[in-house]
Length: 58
View (cartoon, rainbow, N blue to C red):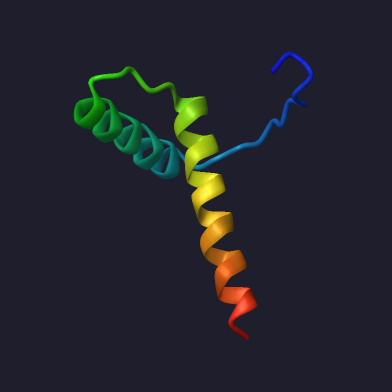
């Protein structure tokens, strides 16, 4: 992962709270600590998959 580009963005505090809550839920369900970065990657990937499927149905 050392060659993975870094992406910097600003997010409203409310969205960061939602991301952190998601990470906490996943950690509680799996028993594995989940970083904010890992949570954001998972949420972006899932969101893109959903939107790509929706676009394919049109």
